Length: 390
Ligand code: FE
Ligand code: FE
Image (cartoon, rainbow, N blue to C red):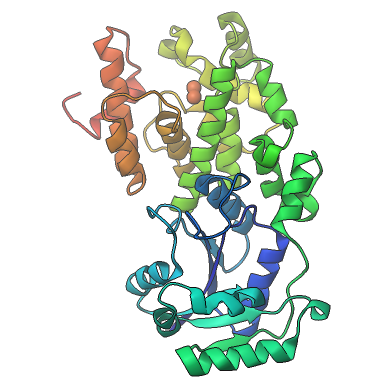
């Protein structure tokens, strides 16, 4: 049977302390994996300083990416209403019948768990791994007594971890972010960048956001941030690299707003091949030009990111998963003005990336043709995968 560790929390934001606690639990109980579960609407801790569920999930995805045996799930943030652990455990038991569940908690929680909704069911569904606070702050005898009490009264299976967690708090990191401080000492760098780029917790504008704001309108900049956010969300859901998704989302429209001669010059100087149809349609030029600009002015060298920028407008056949994510994020980001079929595309994007891309292309084709404009053959080809009669 697989031993699956679960790390629930607000993760507002996730920090190195959370990761260290998960690592302690992983090693102490020889777990196969730890799944991080940012909570949706927590019964406690709500307030002004709480970042959105998507932002907290995205930061978690960025934090665990590339960490062996760590993963994250959007299960709690996508569930409507208040988050209760018992619901999550019930759902996970169904989805992973082969897994023994180990819920990782801090020692404070061990004193509150009697108040949890359906605590007896929680005890039946999982074991607990308790990470003590730093040694000088923890009364270990009291903690052992509390564990014994919970075993006797509610039937909990409780393991006290042999190591303490570090003394780090999300509150302190939020305060540091608000002052424009470098949060990267306390949280993985991609999370620190995300906080700054999205201005979370009152963080002052990040250098990349400032650079973009010189050429993009406020509306376009807001769309850009929303695409980047949606792209990370989709990357987390479909197992794609969230760091690449974020960067590609941030820069997908970086050349938007430049005039046609500048765009053509960028395409030429960047050695990007653009076909005749593209070259004749100014609205399409910002995609190939954007790839050149991202390389020249934003110093992006990652070919996968540049390619996602390059193909974000027309799409193409056999797109990489990252290209599909950017294409789709551009279309379904929450600020996008409503159009017929948008709700269906958004719903499909949670389930099947290929199907959602084909639906988005079909909608795009309809829109262009309805207005009597020229449709790029690549979009036409993509759209046919959804409705063969387009
Ligand atoms: Fe665009
Ligand atoms: Fe866009």
